[in-house]
Every structure is written in structure tokens, then in C-alpha cells.
Amino acid sequence: MSSRQSRHLAFAGLFIVVTVTMLLNISIVATVSNETKQMFDYLDSLPESSVIIVSFDHEASSLPEMKPLGLVILRHLFEKDHKLIGVALLAEGTGVGYRLMQETAKEYNKEYGRDYVFLGFKPQFIAAILSMGESIDGTFPEDYLGNATSEIELLSDVHNYDDVAAVVSLADGSLTTHWIEYGNEKYGVQISAAVAASMLTTYDPYISSGQLKAMVGGLRGAAEYENLLGIGGSGARSMLAQSSAHLYIILLIIIGNVIYFRSRKKG
Amino acid sequence: MDPGTIVAGILTIAILSFLYGDNPVYKMAETLLVGVSMGYVLVITWTNTLMAVLFKPLFVESEFWLIIPFIFGLFMFGRFHKSTSFLSRYSMAVLIGSGAGVAIPAMLGARTLRQMTATVEMVQGDSFLTIFSGLVVVAGLFSTLSYFYFSREHEGIMGRSARVGTYFLMIFFGTTFGYTVMSRVSTFIGRMDFLLSDFLHLTN
Image (tube, rainbow over all chains, first blue to last red; front, side, top):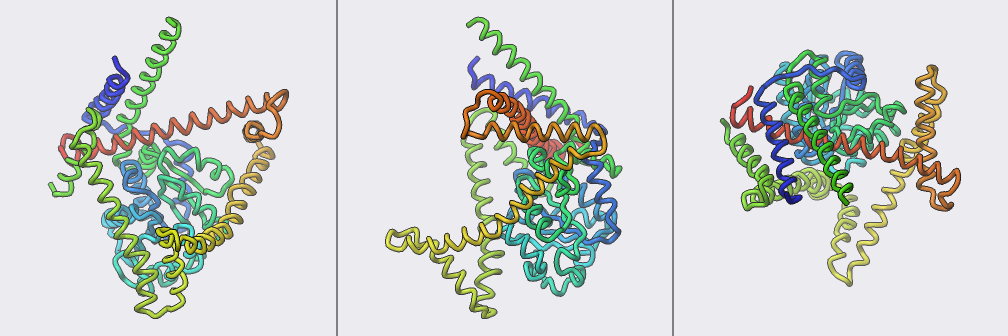
């Protein structure tokens, strides 16, 4: 078998494993890790009606992972009656962020302008983070829908980070680092994050140092968070497929190693 | 079913057809993705950057000081011609100078000083486990640093330390790779979830 054929076979196997397990339509309850519990407790401990910035710092390509994470965070924040300010530091996060906020706000009967607002995209993320530390309505003279921010009820008492209880960065890359470096280091605003699984090791040191208050990551993190919230969702629904895919990959690694060592023995 | 879901479903299948092999349907979907992404970013940049931050304030609200960044922005296009390429250096100088001025103190504080403090604080922990973890982190820090120290040959204690450093590096890369695989599998599962539930209605 050629390497090209074996590669296709491996991918086809993964396709079958994921499809079959998803067709079984079984939601499994994920055991909650300490990190996810810490994130849940942190957001839960914020005083009711706190003003929180939710920053959509991801691209559309990571949506399958970021959407379940974004949904659980927004649901938790709306459930606690917090006032949410949505921003996007990556252009592709703009449309996604607005849709997610609108979708969850509808579930909790939240009103745009009073309970939440979406300010849209601001280019040059470092400049945007620094500028919001001086003036939020100066950085975003208009919201995503073109309304003057000076006339939005929610923002009438919110001028800069001094009036914001926390920032939650939904990131698939390194943008949370900039929130830590400029938002937290310079202005002292508390940062927490919901990140793609591939970024978990990058942000771990910031949890240990306390620069990042809490963090939840990946589809597994979303499933655990859904468990804590007591709601179902795509996180829990995908956990069986995720676990089966991991077992399949482990099996491939073992088979690959056996073939490698046998061929080395033969010389 | 709304047209958006139908289009998304067909395009997802077109992208997944790459599993069979490179083919015109996949190429079409890939090209469409790049084009739509670029178009979207271009429109957002035009609306939120050029119009909102420059043209509207400068030409409608008469904030004439914006002519300075506007000119510096135009200088960047000087690179297209040999005789004017020197102009872009002024813009680059402002960009790099201000960027470094803003970034260096912040990065030094957040990435170096705060991280060093956290490393030392762990060793001073109140439980055996915390102190042990702290000592492992300190050992990892020094051994990894010694691996990247090239001013002295990696022999004797230095060599052994550098070797231990490679183990820490391997653990880090292994963990990161594992999480990256997990992330990619999640992306695939997300698309399959969409196909099976929203598009084909085979699951709830």
C-alpha cells in the first residue's frame, strides 16, 4: 500500500468513526475539570448586572470549536443578568459575534442597547485595546448597527475599563495575550478566556501567574461548561465522537509504531 | 431549509471531497472560500477603518490633523516605484518606533517580570505539592534555558542540563501537538454535526 493510499484510508476511517458515533446521537456527560470549574465559578462570582466585554477574537474557520464555547459563556452571562458589550478584534469574528449574541439574547429575552450591545470590529487590535482603556465610545463612535454609542443606554455609565468588571476573550489564536499585555498590565482589567484547544498550553502560564483569571478550552471545555450550566448542547453531543476519534487516533499511532519497528527489524 | 444551509451543506461536502483526492469541485469551493473571505475582510476594513477612522472624520467632520497619518499611509505605496520607495521608510520608521515603544514595556512586564515572579512564588507555596510543582517548573526553566545557551559548549553539567531541557521541550511540544490534533478533530466533528443535523436532518 502506498503512503497516499494509507493516508486516505486513515482519513476514511476517521470519517466513518465520527459519522457512526454521531448518528448514535448519544450525549455523554463530561466530567468537569478544575479549569472549567474555575472559569464557571469566576464568572458566577461576578456581582449581578456587571458590565462585561465579550471579545470575539477568532476567525470563522474555528467556528465548530468556538461556537459551542461562545454559546455557553454568553448563556451563563445572560443568565446572571450581566450587561454585555460585544467587540471583535478580528474582522471574521464580527458577523459571528453579532449572530451569537443576538441568538442567545433572544433565549433570555434581553433587549439590545439596554442589556447588550455589539460594537463591531476595530482594526489594529493593540491600538483598539489601549484605546478602549481611555474611552470606549471614543474608540467605537458607532455600534455595529450604526447607532451612535453616546445614545446607547447601556453605555451611558460605561466610559473605559474602570467601569468594566471583566473581559472574556473568545480566541482561537494569540489575541488573548494582547488583552493580558495591554488590558490587564496597563489598565488592570480582569481577563478570562475561552480558547481553542490548540491554545491551552500557550495560556497555561498566565493562569499560574494570575494574569488570566480563568480559562476554558476546546469542545471538551464547552461540554463540561454545558454540564455545569445544566443544559444540553453541541459540546455534550459531540463528546462521544470526540472520544471515539481520539481512541481511533491512538490505535493508528500504535499500528504505525508496530509497522515502523517491524520494518526496522527486517532492515 | 433556508438557502444558506443548503449552500453551506453543499460547500462542506465539496471541501470534504478532498479526502478522495484533489478535484475540480474541491478547487471551486476552496477558491470561493478564499474569495469570499478576502471580500468580507476588504469590506469590513473599508467600512470600519478607511471610512470610519480616516475619510469621514477628515473630509466630513473637518478633522484636518488626520492629513498627517493619511500622507504617511500614502507613503507606503511609494514602494511600488524605485524613485519613491524611500518615502515608505518614513512610514515604517513611525510604525516600528511607536510599535516598539508601546510593546516593549508591556511585554517586558507581562511576559517576563510577571512570569518570573509567578515562578518564584510557586516555590514559596504552602503545600508540599505546590512546592514540588514549583521546583519542577524552576528545573524546567533553567534546563530549557541552558539548551538555548550557545555561548558555551554543551558538555559536563551544561550538557546534562541541556539534555534535561530537551525532555521538557518534548513534553511541551507533545502536549501542544495533542491539543492541536484535538482542536482539528473538533473542527471536523463540528462540520459533521452541521451536515448530519442541520443539512441532512439525520440527528437532532
